[in-house]
Image 1 (cartoon, rainbow, N blue to C red):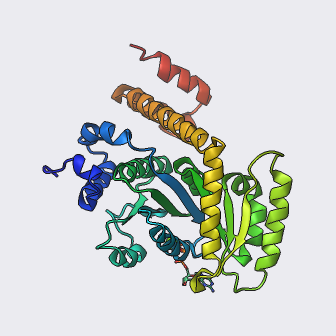
Image 2 (cartoon, rainbow, N blue to C red):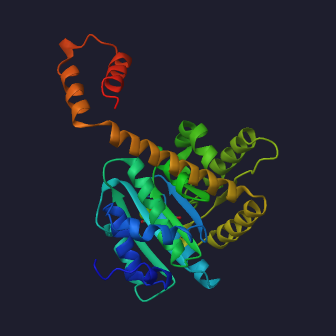
Image 3 (cartoon, helix red, strand yellow):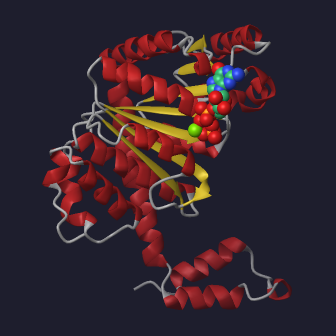
Length: 313
Ligand SMILES: Nc1nc2c(ncn2[C@@H]2O[C@H](COP(=O)(O)OP(=O)(O)OP(=O)(O)O)[C@@H](O)[C@H]2O)c(=O)[nH]1
Ligand SMILES: [Mg+2]
């Protein structure tokens, strides 16, 4: 790590990018030396989040979108996030294949990131990794993540624009996720449209979106694809370009970036305060009070007061 120089990131040196992301994953002290330089360039790239249930076809779609972006002479960084798999040191099995495909291509960088236990930490890491890719000059950053719950919200935190991939069988999921998922997507893709029911579910989703979207707000579109045959991809690509341009012109992307910046600051404050709060003395008192269920007679809020007040410096 000694030879690491953040200026190599600005030169789009993929080895330096990988090193920087490893430092992020390890929360290495050296981060402080270069992150301030990197951060200045962190808003140069457009960040697109792609999420959806396992096996919906996200990677198949992303692979083809990469080709579409290359054809427009755009450079791309992909961060494949698997919240359910442990921290992997860089590569999840399925992505090794794709990585090989672009080894000699300076315009495409692909990296996998796993989970170390807490989703908040993962969200923080993926955002910082996006900052590095942006600083390397990548035009587009794609976050691909498996998820049907909290993970989507973490992706939204990291992305400017969000694509949710569903399949014709996702009807029940849509019912379940209505409130949550509908708020986060800018485009819905019903992939595997070679299977029955895809038109019906697309209609159902469109109707729901019409009902949920406030007048004057951006109305997400619903598109069909059969990614394994490349069908529907160029339409999706064009739509992503048009919608991101519209949201950029309307100032929506800027608002999202600003709120992301604010959230990151607030998260760091919570993290810092909490770390400072849990001194050994407080840990010990906490352990004593919560030693066994039989001995518990104090309401939680009283314990909190005790922990806070007893140790004020
Ligand atoms: N029938 C059909 N199969 C598809 C289609 N698109 C992708 N597949 C297949 O579905 C399987 C899963 O595709 P992936 O692209 O790996 O899906 P994913 O959402 O990235 O999967 P995870 O990352 O594991 O959640 C693969 O075998 C694809 O070939 C499609 O439009 N129709
Ligand atoms: Mg995948």
